[in-house]
Each structure stands twice: as C-alpha cells, then as structure tokens.
Image (cartoon, rainbow, N blue to C red; front, side, top):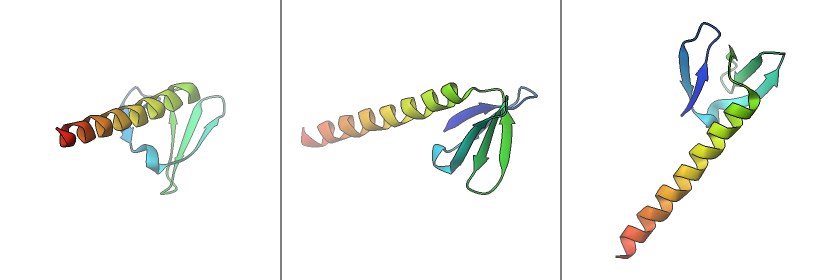
Length: 71
C-alpha cells in the first residue's frame, strides 16, 4: 500500500495498482482507476519512491520464499 497524505494531514492508503495518473498542479493530484482523485501533500517523487520500495520489497520477499522452498 502507498501512503498518501491529504491536505488536512490525514493519511490515505491506496494500492499502487489503483493509481492511474499523478499530476502536479502545483499540489499533487492522484487519480485512481475508479475515477476518484485526491489532492495530497506528497510529492510525485515521494509517491514514486514508495511504489519502487514496495515493488523492491515484494521481489525480496518472493526471492526469500523461493529460497526457503528449496531447503
């Protein structure tokens, strides 16, 4: 899950698979595949870094699970 921070400071968690577009307007507008959109405090770079970290962690977990199956 990706943590987005709404303008009022409340966290919002979304699946990276639900993110359709991210736009700077100058705030960050995140549009989801559902058609909903959120204006958030996160920068584009922050959201991108969270997605990359999530995918990296998934690959590491998968590799660890595969290694455990071999032993």
